[in-house]
Image 1: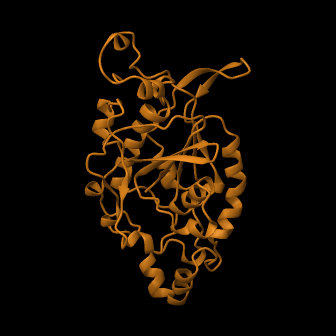
Image 2 (image 1 turned 135 degrees about the horizontal axis):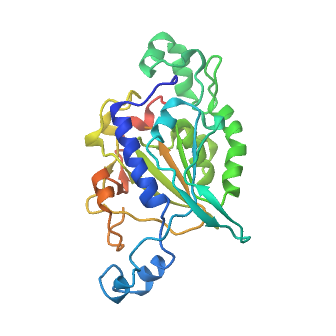
Image 3 (image 1 turned 135 degrees about the vertical axis):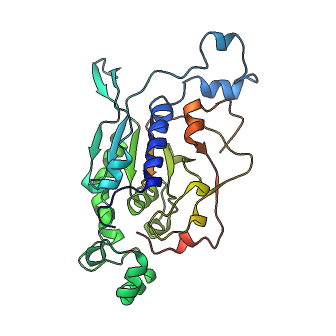
Length: 302
């Protein structure tokens, strides 16, 4: 809660996110990657195609960057580079585009906790036990005293979600858990009652690529649980995801508009090798595994 800055672990995540934005979001996949994977048994091997430069990534594509107006999300974006590229749009117009131009959006501000703003969850339980119990009983509709509920936040996020649907460029959203839960539930077609309980792990990037019947999803873990320090969200380190054995790699799902959600808090064998910067930053695409009794699923977080 409140308008706190980043911790030491948060700053390290911000550096890794900057590498991910440059290497994965801005460059994306080559158009022929899918064809190589499906039709060529030698995809990823060396040969004439390699010498022709087919293994290199394409030039940068235009990307957008949205954050909330709170310090911690803007500090998470501080290391992302803002290169200027020339981009030609569908109508033939060419203009200079500033990559990941920072756009703070008040719609993306975290759920306001009213009189409880700035308090830890343990403090809320101790000082306002009745309010704590009410929220545990109905997290969707509960409204903090002089604050907001998940239903209130859903209403202010609706125009932004519609704007995302109209946007052609990939959008990187650096947001808060409560906000990202609602956006995730919207694009994945979940019931609104499920939104407050969606798993949005800290230090992960979730890629959603729209298709005819919903969205493809891919999750990238930029900081594993063993590296985490105290994050101040009352969620134990053991609630961070673990990579499934043998499933570490980098992969992008092909598609047009992509939405990347990074909280300020995979498949191998696809012929895609992480760059030296990515390996140094610990970028991993993973299939997350959680225990059914994982504390984070029942934690009274926003």
